[in-house]
Length: 251
Image 1 (cartoon, rainbow, N blue to C red):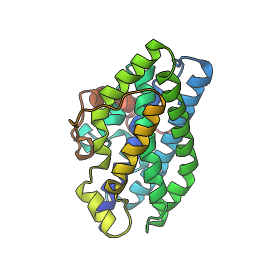
Image 2: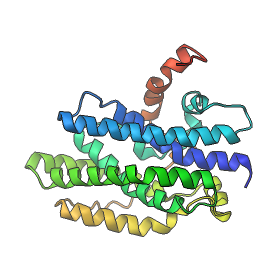
Image 3: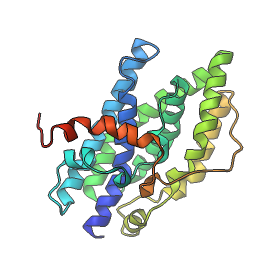
C-alpha cells in the first residue's frame, strides 16, 4: 500500500473524530446541566486526543513535510474526509445525543476491528482509544433511552432528531478507493461487513427508548469524498481561525 493511500485512509478515520470533537466543543458551558456539560466536553477531548494520534502518524508518512497542526487546520473543505453526520449542527440537545449515539455505535465497531490491523500504529491507537469510545456509546445510549422514554416533549424531540439524522447513517459503511486498498492489505477495516449488525443494535435500543425506527430508505453521502453539507464551511471558519489569522504560530 503506498503512502498516499494510507494517508487518505487515516484521514477517513481521523477527520470524523476531529469534526465531531469540534461540534461537541461548541457546547462547552451550554449543556443542560453541569454534569452533562462536563461529560460532553470530556468526550470532545477524548476525540481530539485520538485525532492527534492519527494526525501525528499521518504527518510522519506524508511526503509534504506536514505537521499535525497543518493537517488539522490548513486543509480546504474538499480535503476533509469525514462523514456528513458528524458535521451536522447542534440543533438542540436531542440532536446532539442522537448524532453522538448513531456515530458511537459505528465507532466502537470500527475500533474493535481496527485493533487487528496489520499496521501496528493504527492497531495501537485503536487499543488505546477503545475504552473511551465504549464509554461514549454507553453515555449517548443511556441519554437516548432517557429522552425517548421520558416526557412527551423529550420523546418528540428525540424522535425528530433520529428521523432527521437517519439519512446520514448509510454513509458510515461506504468504502472509498483508499479504504478498499487498505482492506486488501490487512491494514483497513471493511466496515461494510458490520452494516447489518449496526442497524440491528441501533434498532434494538430505539425500541427500548420507545422510539420509532425511521422507515425512510433515502440516504445521502459525499463527505468521505470531500463533498460536504452547507454546515461544514462555517464549522471550519471557527476551527481554522487562529491558524489562518496567525500563520505558523506555536503554543
